[in-house]
Amino acid sequence: MLSAISCDTCAIRHRALCGVLSAEEIQKINAIAFRRTFAPNEMILTDRETPEFFGNIISGVVKLSKMMADGRQQIVGLQFASDFIGRPFATRNPFFAEAASEVVLCCFRKKQFEDLVREMPDLEHRMFQHTLDELDAARAWMVLLGRKSAEERIASFINLVVERAQASAGCQSNFMPDAGAADLRIELPLTRAEIADYLGLTIETVSRQFTRLKSRGIIDTAKGRQILVHDVGVLRDVAGEEDPVNLGLE
Amino acid sequence: MLSAISCDTCAIRHRALCGVLSAEEIQKINAIAFRRTFAPNEMILTDRETPEFFGNIISGVVKLSKMMADGRQQIVGLQFASDFIGRPFATRNPFFAEAASEVVLCCFRKKQFEDLVREMPDLEHRMFQHTLDELDAARAWMVLLGRKSAEERIASFINLVVERAQASAGCQSNFMPDAGAADLRIELPLTRAEIADYLGLTIETVSRQFTRLKSRGIIDTAKGRQILVHDVGVLRDVAGEEDPVNLGLE
DNA sequence: CGAGGTCGTTGATCTCAATCAATTTGCCAC
DNA sequence: GTGGCAAATTGATTGAGATCAACGACCTCG
Image (cartoon, rainbow over all chains, first blue to last red; front, side, top):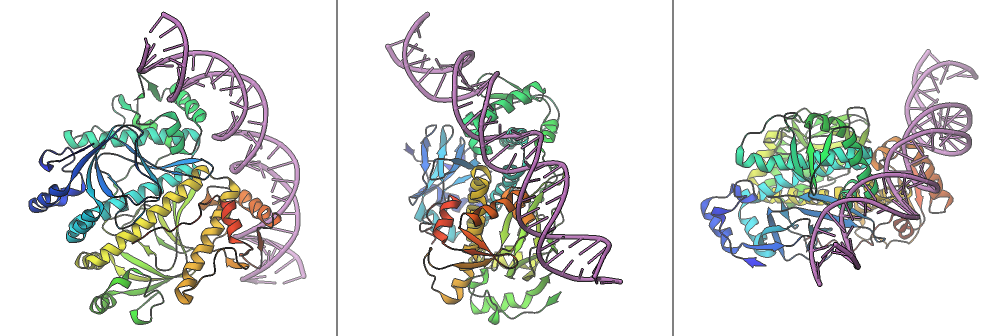
């Protein structure tokens, strides 16, 4: 599915890469952008082939995964609205990108986009920053995969989804109550099998740990994949996370 | 320890970030660069404080690590010659950087370097590329931490050290025999405890798996931390790695 | 020389999560 | 409604790696 776009009405106008661009630059980028929609479980990019486009997520969740020769799988990242998909300046991105929900992307043809980036140092700077943040997030996840217990992993995952939900919400409301206030209702964007692949566990262990957190009174489950978090502070403790000090980004 | 430098005689002149710069630019950068030497186990950057400098590794190995509140530790990356240390454009880098061996850095004061980077888009482009590579490496490591067995992890680690050694060597000799030729002698840059923290294992398991690989005839151990690899192809199989296809970088 | 140290190996035992195996729940089409 | 199917839960058992413990190799320092 393809369609032309207008940046003015774009939902992620102020969060995405293009947020740093001038009016003229936006115009330029608008001219070559197009939208694509992906159904849940639709593959966006694969392992080996050279991707022919580059995209910003407007809505939906994308999972990045790697697969070993014998079928073992590991999800190496989740991408949400305003994150980007596709590796610029390389002929290959070494993992799969798959729609976890319905996904809308703001796309550019690879070559055109790369030329544009080289013309607009601010845009490249913004992408660089974003990539540094991704690298920090990947390294934080390595602690989870290398050192955390199953329960800590599940709590960390719920926490991640909470944070992402708040980040999106905060964009509209620009005020967020502190951790530990009222109940929080969130929707998990992944199946049990996907959560297992993200956390380095099996689906049975994931299921059991959800049950355990529920019986410990830390969460409740609701219709579909909804989760009720009673106290985010407690959740973070169970997750074994550092108190989220100021990250000090410029 | 501090000393002035000359880029002309720099060992990593052609591999490092500065490789993309013009003669004038090199001069400019040379004027503000200084060298620092760190002893093994000396801390280069910590968790929280704002780093006041930015550095390129000229020689030695640096480990990047994170620690949980209760002391559990995870090494989230190893940096070798020509890699860089310190996070530009942020007031904090969220992990420790510690010298694993004697380390020589080519340093710049943070502010000066950031200004320089913004003036030289090629330099920023090069750093961006490098960061993308780091991100890919981090994600590949997530597969190891989430899905590989202890034996696969050890084999993967040895393989990593082999590749890094070859990358450095290849810089001088510019020809490398294919995988699976003669015996290869390498020196592990980490203690057992560090290897355990890198692989998400305990020292005992690391030790047992080395013994196991030895008795399986895949490696031999020698004086100090030296390892003899008989057939890199076999090692890669044991590591559960994909055949290293062309990565397709620009 | 022996004392004290770190580092690495090996053995015995335990435990957490994987594996194997039923069920159960929810959802869609008909 | 009922059949069919994927997703999720729950139980029984196993096993890989952690933990606890002892010991050997190799330092340096007195």
